[in-house]
Length: 209
Ligand SMILES: Nc1ncnc2c1ncn2[C@@H]1O[C@H](COP(=O)(O)OP(=O)(O)OP(=O)(O)O)[C@@H](O)[C@H]1O
Ligand SMILES: C[C@H](N)[C@H](N)CCCCCC(=O)O
Ligand SMILES: [Mg+2]
Image 1 (cartoon, rainbow, N blue to C red):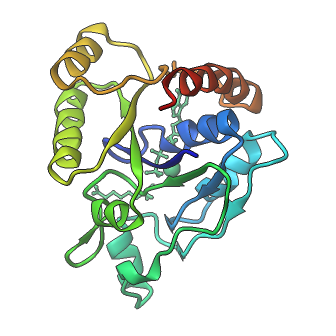
Image 2 (spheres, protein in one colour):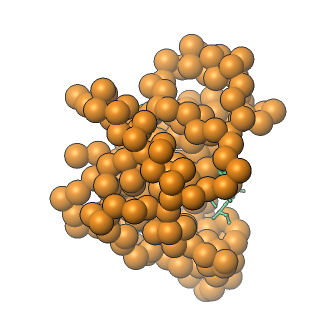
Protein backbone atom coordinates (compact mmCIF):
# COMPACT_ATOMS: atom_id res chain seq x y z
CA UNK A 1 0.00 0.00 0.00
CA UNK A 2 1.24 3.51 -0.78
CA UNK A 3 0.95 5.92 2.17
CA UNK A 4 2.34 9.20 0.99
CA UNK A 5 2.56 12.76 2.25
CA UNK A 6 2.51 15.30 -0.58
CA UNK A 7 4.77 18.22 0.22
CA UNK A 8 6.34 20.84 -2.01
CA UNK A 9 8.97 23.51 -2.31
CA UNK A 10 6.40 26.13 -1.29
CA UNK A 11 2.78 27.11 -1.58
CA UNK A 12 0.99 27.17 -4.97
CA UNK A 13 3.51 24.80 -6.55
CA UNK A 14 0.87 22.27 -7.60
CA UNK A 15 0.55 19.92 -4.61
CA UNK A 16 -3.22 19.75 -5.02
CA UNK A 17 -3.01 19.09 -8.78
CA UNK A 18 -0.41 16.35 -8.20
CA UNK A 19 -2.52 14.96 -5.33
CA UNK A 20 -5.52 14.75 -7.67
CA UNK A 21 -3.39 12.90 -10.24
CA UNK A 22 -2.04 10.49 -7.61
CA UNK A 23 -5.49 9.97 -6.09
CA UNK A 24 -6.82 9.02 -9.51
CA UNK A 25 -3.74 6.95 -10.42
CA UNK A 26 -3.99 4.79 -7.29
CA UNK A 27 -7.73 5.14 -6.64
CA UNK A 28 -6.37 6.29 -3.30
CA UNK A 29 -8.04 7.97 -0.34
CA UNK A 30 -7.18 11.63 0.30
CA UNK A 31 -6.74 13.65 3.49
CA UNK A 32 -5.76 17.28 4.00
CA UNK A 33 -5.16 17.49 7.76
CA UNK A 34 -4.81 21.28 7.93
CA UNK A 35 -6.70 23.50 5.49
CA UNK A 36 -5.91 27.22 5.85
CA UNK A 37 -8.30 29.18 3.65
CA UNK A 38 -11.78 27.91 2.82
CA UNK A 39 -12.78 30.16 -0.10
CA UNK A 40 -13.48 29.74 -2.99
CA UNK A 41 -12.97 26.06 -2.19
CA UNK A 42 -10.83 23.71 -0.14
CA UNK A 43 -8.12 21.43 -1.54
CA UNK A 44 -10.31 18.39 -0.80
CA UNK A 45 -13.14 20.10 -2.71
CA UNK A 46 -10.82 20.67 -5.68
CA UNK A 47 -9.69 17.04 -5.65
CA UNK A 48 -13.28 15.77 -5.47
CA UNK A 49 -14.10 17.82 -8.57
CA UNK A 50 -11.10 16.43 -10.51
CA UNK A 51 -11.20 12.74 -9.58
CA UNK A 52 -13.63 10.37 -11.30
CA UNK A 53 -12.95 6.94 -9.82
CA UNK A 54 -15.67 5.52 -7.52
CA UNK A 55 -13.24 4.16 -4.90
CA UNK A 56 -11.47 7.17 -3.37
CA UNK A 57 -12.69 8.36 0.03
CA UNK A 58 -12.13 11.88 1.30
CA UNK A 59 -11.50 12.25 5.00
CA UNK A 60 -12.49 15.44 6.83
CA UNK A 61 -9.77 17.94 7.66
CA UNK A 62 -8.67 17.97 11.30
CA UNK A 63 -8.37 21.76 11.10
CA UNK A 64 -10.45 23.94 8.77
CA UNK A 65 -9.12 27.45 9.24
CA UNK A 66 -10.71 30.48 7.63
CA UNK A 67 -7.61 32.57 6.99
CA UNK A 68 -5.56 31.83 3.82
CA UNK A 69 -2.28 32.20 5.69
CA UNK A 70 0.37 30.14 7.38
CA UNK A 71 -1.49 27.56 9.52
CA UNK A 72 0.10 28.80 12.77
CA UNK A 73 -1.24 32.30 12.10
CA UNK A 74 -4.61 31.09 10.82
CA UNK A 75 -5.02 28.97 13.95
CA UNK A 76 -4.02 31.82 16.27
CA UNK A 77 -6.60 34.05 14.57
CA UNK A 78 -9.26 31.57 15.70
CA UNK A 79 -7.84 31.17 19.22
CA UNK A 80 -6.59 27.64 18.44
CA UNK A 81 -3.24 25.96 19.06
CA UNK A 82 -2.49 23.05 16.77
CA UNK A 83 -0.82 20.09 18.52
CA UNK A 84 0.82 16.96 17.15
CA UNK A 85 -1.44 14.73 19.27
CA UNK A 86 -4.44 16.13 17.33
CA UNK A 87 -3.45 14.06 14.29
CA UNK A 88 -4.05 10.35 13.68
CA UNK A 89 -3.97 8.74 10.26
CA UNK A 90 -7.48 7.97 8.98
CA UNK A 91 -8.46 4.35 9.33
CA UNK A 92 -8.32 2.83 5.83
CA UNK A 93 -6.95 -0.24 4.06
CA UNK A 94 -6.65 1.71 0.81
CA UNK A 95 -3.72 3.72 -0.56
CA UNK A 96 -3.65 7.05 1.26
CA UNK A 97 -2.45 10.49 0.17
CA UNK A 98 -2.00 13.22 2.74
CA UNK A 99 -1.49 16.77 1.48
CA UNK A 100 0.49 19.32 3.50
CA UNK A 101 0.01 23.09 3.60
CA UNK A 102 2.68 25.14 1.83
CA UNK A 103 6.22 23.75 2.07
CA UNK A 104 8.06 21.42 4.44
CA UNK A 105 9.00 23.90 7.16
CA UNK A 106 5.70 25.75 7.33
CA UNK A 107 4.69 26.24 10.97
CA UNK A 108 1.58 24.73 12.51
CA UNK A 109 2.22 26.22 15.96
CA UNK A 110 5.22 27.61 17.88
CA UNK A 111 7.96 24.98 17.58
CA UNK A 112 5.85 22.71 15.37
CA UNK A 113 6.43 22.32 11.61
CA UNK A 114 4.83 20.35 8.78
CA UNK A 115 8.00 18.21 8.83
CA UNK A 116 7.17 17.19 12.42
CA UNK A 117 3.69 16.15 11.30
CA UNK A 118 5.19 13.97 8.55
CA UNK A 119 7.46 12.23 11.10
CA UNK A 120 4.54 11.84 13.52
CA UNK A 121 2.41 10.19 10.82
CA UNK A 122 5.36 8.03 9.69
CA UNK A 123 4.86 8.66 5.98
CA UNK A 124 7.12 8.78 2.94
CA UNK A 125 6.88 11.94 0.86
CA UNK A 126 6.28 13.06 -2.68
CA UNK A 127 7.95 16.43 -3.30
CA UNK A 128 6.39 18.79 -5.84
CA UNK A 129 8.79 21.26 -7.43
CA UNK A 130 7.50 24.00 -9.71
CA UNK A 131 10.04 25.44 -12.12
CA UNK A 132 10.82 29.15 -11.59
CA UNK A 133 14.05 31.08 -11.15
CA UNK A 134 15.07 30.17 -7.60
CA UNK A 135 13.41 26.76 -7.61
CA UNK A 136 16.73 24.85 -7.70
CA UNK A 137 17.68 26.30 -4.34
CA UNK A 138 14.20 25.73 -2.87
CA UNK A 139 14.14 22.14 -4.12
CA UNK A 140 17.62 21.25 -2.83
CA UNK A 141 16.88 22.85 0.56
CA UNK A 142 13.67 20.84 0.82
CA UNK A 143 15.42 17.58 -0.09
CA UNK A 144 18.26 18.27 2.40
CA UNK A 145 15.78 19.03 5.17
CA UNK A 146 13.98 15.76 4.47
CA UNK A 147 17.24 13.81 4.47
CA UNK A 148 18.34 15.45 7.75
CA UNK A 149 15.11 14.22 9.37
CA UNK A 150 15.32 10.71 7.93
CA UNK A 151 12.16 11.14 5.86
CA UNK A 152 12.22 8.96 2.72
CA UNK A 153 11.38 10.52 -0.64
CA UNK A 154 9.17 8.26 -2.77
CA UNK A 155 9.52 10.63 -5.71
CA UNK A 156 9.99 14.17 -6.99
CA UNK A 157 7.53 15.71 -9.45
CA UNK A 158 8.48 18.64 -11.65
CA UNK A 159 5.43 20.73 -12.39
CA UNK A 160 5.06 23.56 -14.89
CA UNK A 161 7.31 24.83 -17.66
CA UNK A 162 10.09 22.25 -18.26
CA UNK A 163 13.67 23.37 -17.63
CA UNK A 164 16.22 20.69 -18.52
CA UNK A 165 19.18 22.47 -16.87
CA UNK A 166 17.26 22.74 -13.58
CA UNK A 167 15.83 19.26 -13.62
CA UNK A 168 19.05 17.53 -14.69
CA UNK A 169 21.06 19.28 -11.98
CA UNK A 170 18.59 18.41 -9.20
CA UNK A 171 18.31 14.83 -10.39
CA UNK A 172 22.08 14.27 -10.69
CA UNK A 173 22.98 16.12 -7.48
CA UNK A 174 20.48 14.32 -5.26
CA UNK A 175 19.77 11.00 -7.01
CA UNK A 176 16.14 11.36 -5.97
CA UNK A 177 13.62 9.14 -7.88
CA UNK A 178 11.82 11.18 -10.55
CA UNK A 179 8.11 10.74 -11.09
CA UNK A 180 6.50 11.74 -14.39
CA UNK A 181 6.45 15.50 -14.96
CA UNK A 182 3.36 17.69 -15.22
CA UNK A 183 3.26 20.33 -17.97
CA UNK A 184 1.54 23.72 -17.83
CA UNK A 185 -2.09 23.07 -18.79
CA UNK A 186 -4.42 25.71 -20.19
CA UNK A 187 -7.17 24.28 -17.98
CA UNK A 188 -7.06 21.77 -15.14
CA UNK A 189 -9.92 19.35 -15.80
CA UNK A 190 -10.86 15.75 -14.87
CA UNK A 191 -9.73 14.69 -18.37
CA UNK A 192 -6.29 16.24 -17.84
CA UNK A 193 -5.99 14.57 -14.43
CA UNK A 194 -7.06 11.23 -15.90
CA UNK A 195 -4.43 11.48 -18.66
CA UNK A 196 -1.60 12.09 -16.16
CA UNK A 197 -3.00 9.45 -13.80
CA UNK A 198 -2.38 6.76 -16.44
CA UNK A 199 1.28 7.82 -16.65
CA UNK A 200 1.71 7.86 -12.86
CA UNK A 201 0.00 4.45 -12.52
CA UNK A 202 2.64 2.97 -14.84
CA UNK A 203 5.36 4.69 -12.80
CA UNK A 204 4.07 3.13 -9.57
CA UNK A 205 3.85 -0.30 -11.20
CA UNK A 206 7.45 0.01 -12.39
CA UNK A 207 8.80 1.07 -8.98
CA UNK A 208 6.92 -1.21 -6.59
CA UNK A 209 9.25 -2.82 -4.05
N1 LIG B 1 0.64 22.25 -14.40
C1 LIG B 1 -0.26 23.18 -14.17
N2 LIG B 1 -1.00 23.69 -15.19
C2 LIG B 1 -1.94 24.62 -14.97
N3 LIG B 1 -2.27 25.11 -13.75
C3 LIG B 1 -1.58 24.63 -12.70
C4 LIG B 1 -0.56 23.65 -12.84
N4 LIG B 1 -0.08 23.38 -11.61
C5 LIG B 1 -0.76 24.13 -10.74
N5 LIG B 1 -1.67 24.89 -11.39
C6 LIG B 1 -2.60 25.86 -10.79
O1 LIG B 1 -1.85 26.68 -9.88
C7 LIG B 1 -2.63 26.94 -8.72
C8 LIG B 1 -1.86 26.44 -7.49
O2 LIG B 1 -1.74 25.03 -7.57
P1 LIG B 1 -2.14 24.09 -6.34
O3 LIG B 1 -3.43 24.55 -5.74
O4 LIG B 1 -2.08 22.69 -6.80
O5 LIG B 1 -0.96 24.47 -5.32
P2 LIG B 1 -0.64 23.88 -3.86
O6 LIG B 1 0.81 23.60 -3.83
O7 LIG B 1 -1.57 22.76 -3.59
O8 LIG B 1 -0.95 25.09 -2.85
P3 LIG B 1 -1.33 25.04 -1.24
O9 LIG B 1 -0.05 25.28 -0.51
O10 LIG B 1 -2.29 26.18 -1.10
O11 LIG B 1 -1.96 23.72 -0.93
C9 LIG B 1 -3.99 26.24 -8.93
O12 LIG B 1 -4.91 27.17 -9.47
C10 LIG B 1 -3.66 25.17 -9.95
O13 LIG B 1 -4.77 24.76 -10.72
C1 LIG C 1 -2.82 29.80 2.28
C2 LIG C 1 -1.94 28.93 1.41
N1 LIG C 1 -2.66 28.59 0.21
C3 LIG C 1 -1.48 27.66 2.14
N2 LIG C 1 -2.66 26.92 2.53
C4 LIG C 1 -0.59 27.95 3.33
C5 LIG C 1 0.75 28.51 2.91
C6 LIG C 1 1.64 28.83 4.09
C7 LIG C 1 2.96 29.42 3.68
C8 LIG C 1 3.74 29.90 4.86
C9 LIG C 1 5.15 30.33 4.48
O1 LIG C 1 5.95 29.51 4.00
O2 LIG C 1 5.46 31.52 4.64
MG1 LIG D 1 -2.99 22.48 -2.12
